[in-house]
Structure formats: C-alpha cells, structure tokens
Amino acid sequence: MEHTLKRILFTCGGTAGHVNPAIALAQLMQERDREREVLFVGADRGLEKDLVPKAGYPFRTVHISSFHRSLRPAELRHNLISAVNLVRSPREARAILRQFRPDVVIGTGGYASYPMVQAAARAGIPTAIHESNMVPGLTTEVLANYADRVMVGFEACREHYRRPEKVVVTGTPVREDFFRITREEAKRQLGVDDGRPLIVSFWGSLGASGMNREMADFLALEAAKEPFHHIHGAGKAGYPVLLAQLREKGVDLEAHPALQVREYIYDMAPVLRAADLVLCRAGASTISELTALGVPAVIVPSPYVTNNHQEKNARVLEAAGAAVVVLEQDSSGQALFQAACGILHDESRRTAMAAAMASLGIRDAAERIYQTVLEICK
Image (cartoon, rainbow, N blue to C red; front, side, top):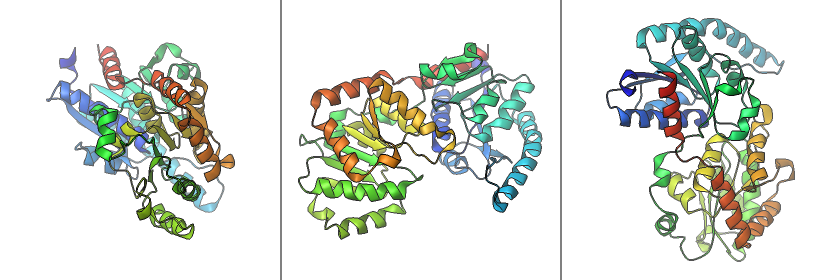
C-alpha cells in the first residue's frame, strides 16, 4: 500500500500547535519512503511560513484569513479582506492540486487548512484532518463534513462530532527528541540532580506579561529557601521586565543558582523530560507533550483564545487527576506557589498525578496517524 503514497500535501497554520504535528508526521512519512514528495500549504502571514521552511519543506500559500467579531472599523476592513479571500482561495487551492497532484491531503488545523481540504475532497482526493484541541474549532467543524477521517487527541473528543464513525483517536504527535534520553539523564545534563524537584514554567505569548508578573512573586517566594530547582521561560519581551521586577523585590538570581530565568527554553525536550511539575497554559502542543511524558501540571488556561478551548483542554487533564487548573482571574504568585508546594511536598500525590497524565498520553501518535492515512488511501 505504501508505494502508492508518493505525494503528500499537508495544510495547516496559525499556531505551532497546528504546524508542529504536521512536521513530525512528514518526517515519519519520509523516513518510511525517502522518495516521497511533501508539500505544505498555509496562509501567507501565518507562523507556518517560518516554521515549515526551517524544517526543510517546500511551502506554498493561499490567501485566507480569519474573521473577527468586533465592529471596529479596522476589524470590519479585516473582515472585508477575509470575505474576498474566501472567494479567491478555492481557485488557488485547485491550482495547487493540479500542479502537485497529491495522493492525499492532510489538514492539521487552522483556518489556512480550509480551502485545501475542501478542494481536495471535492476533487475526489483522500483527505484527513487532525484536531489537537479537545473541542473542535470552526474550521474543523466545517471540514469534518468533507474529510474521510477526523483524527483527535483523546477518546473524550469523539462526542463533539456529528459523524463519530469518521473519528479516529490518534493522539497528537510529539517530536522524537523528547524520548531520546531518560529522566535521570536529563536531570544530570541540566545539573538538577541533587534530589530537589524541578519546576518548569512558561506561558507562551498570549497574556504572558501578566503571568510573568506573577512569576516574579513566585520566584521571590522560592528565593527564601530554594526548596526547588526552577527553570522559567519568560519570552523575549518579558525577560528584561521580569529581571527588573525581581531586582525590585531584592532577588539577585546570581545568588540563587537553583532559580533560572531564561528568555526562551530552547532545549525544551530535556527540560520537560527532567521536570517534576510544569506550570503552563493549555495549548494543544503543550498538552500532548505533558501527556506523552507523564509530567503533572498546574495549568492556567489562556482566556484570550477562541471558544475558550484552552480551559476545555485543561479540564480533561483535571478530570483525570493529572493537573490542577487555576483560572487566570484566581491566579497569583502566591496561589501558584501554594499549588506547586501542595504537589511537590506530597510524593504520593505527585506520583498519582504523573501516572494519570501518562495514562492520557499516546506516544505513537504519528504512527497511528500514518496508519489512518494509509487506510483512506487504499
């Protein structure tokens, strides 16, 4: 069967949570057959235009953009452009299909995937879509009517689709480098193997400035006794601000080697592998990494996302006993510190949370998606 799958078109965009699973799957597919051709299609302004070329794959664009609900003049102009793009993009999608002639089209989320999957389905090309969030977004809801298969991250997702017979639980792919070293090796590599637990925290770009202010309070509380190791990713804009806030609180990080504040956590694979507890948002990529590695979490879902999907993602983990969820309106440095201490000072609770998180993980997600794709291409 695999020999008939020679040209694969991925379409995705908007966030790393949509793009990275597609890249992981493309890598697996080309490992199985080096002669396979892969093409990515996304929006001309999305994150995909940077991530995909960096991964070494050819990239084409269609003119597609989201719709905003605001009635402000700037938003109305944006929506007018989006309406024009909605008419323009199907023609662009059909042209790409004629030129590339894919054997299958795989959409992994974001509005950029809409015109390509729809055009492919109408042309009789096998199609599959992957939704990494617990609750489908508008694009996924619409494309579920066209696609041959809808691939989801968790069994509980199935109830959100009108055609459950199309739904396959595959999980969300996680990069292979997350599994290349053991937890003990990761701790030694990072120099955090003295017996104290490691907290890892990062908040992404949505609302990160407010959460960084809370982390200044959190780190100041830790500095009193340094009960934990802590690696915090503050973000490019937040890094100098957070350092200034810590200085105002009398915290000199050079005097507290167990506390690391970084602009960005570039070595996320060993850092998450070594972590005993993660403080984070509830984006789909983060959720897939936590469940694959079995790391307990204190989650503050971003309230700034469409359809409140981050809280819905987080509640799945909470219901399983894998995470503590703190809404941003209730969050503070003190509250987060108390939540972290409650987990890290209770070994049996931490162990149970880690086991619950791991029970939700699907480590062979890329392989499951691959087999699903082969099935629809028969």
